[in-house]
Image 1: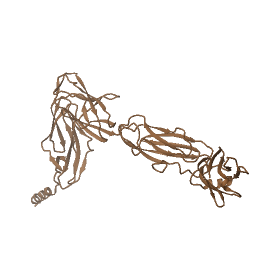
Image 2: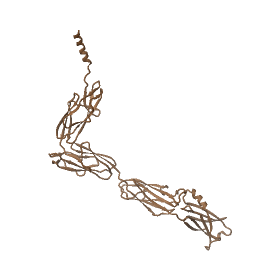
Image 3: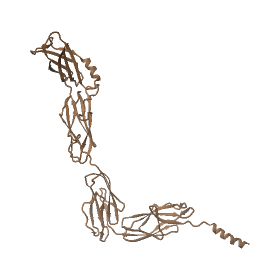
Image 4: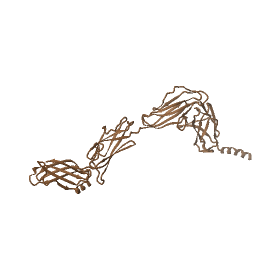
Length: 458
């Protein structure tokens, strides 16, 4: 009875025991996993260089499993950032790990990869090669496959140089079969004849040039036999030159036109646009702004200009200068030019001056004499007016100068004027007697800066 029970229980217990977890080692390549069974070959790597391969341990069983052993045995191979063990892997899931092959000597090297009960052989061939290093102010930097020679920011139209060295640090002669630079704007300053033989201890310098012809990120590649060194740079536009403001006349007055040119401190190595702005501060302050201070071509207090590569001066819609009206108000006129990173300013002082008379007309009508005056007062302080009439002999007609104090009227006008210091007035004078005897009138205007007169005939 007991013997039959044991014979029945033993198969049942065996059926109930869990099956050992089944891991598979693969190398992922995009969406494809390449199985690693008995061995994997890293290929040929230059001594001092390295090649990293990512492996994957996938759990093929229908239950969670543990990785209890993950190690390498053999020279030249290193397990990078190994996971903490034991490591649980769910059914169908995987663990990735990286192995680096870095031969220190030439020849065939191998190592055994242990993952639980799996033990494929890893192989690789070391090839003796000269050391490639980059000259830096702080010392040489050894370059291996995957290294980057970064030129940083380089102006278009200039040449950036990096000096590299190939050095044979072995005790035997070494030969370089391939030395190539790719990338449209990268090149060796002096081509190297191939094959290149280096005796033990010998080194040669390689000047690697970058000559950008357009802006933006630029990549290249340096190949020295098996080594692949990336080249990187960012090409940028050269800076725009400093603008130099010129004015004619150099000391303008009110109601004038100023010709402004912009010379460049050096011939421009790039193209761009700039801006010129006129900013005016009236003196005295407290009056409305003067809208007459504008550039003629734009009708505003600002304008744009262009600079082309090779130019030595700015252009305003093709012209070499722009005209600024100086308005009819005394004060401080600042002309600012903005070009690239440059901000240049030239300040003009529009000085106070006696009133300026633009137009004076005299006429007769049925009731007497009429005088029309168009003028400007850049101090906005006009007040006293004087009218003197003359006969055919040039003698002043009695009662002589007729004086008018119009200070209050002018002040009210200037406080709200939207035309700066410009104004116009019409004066009517009744005449008793023969008005035809009067042939001319002289008008005198006065402000805080002085007086100015003008004569007109009837």
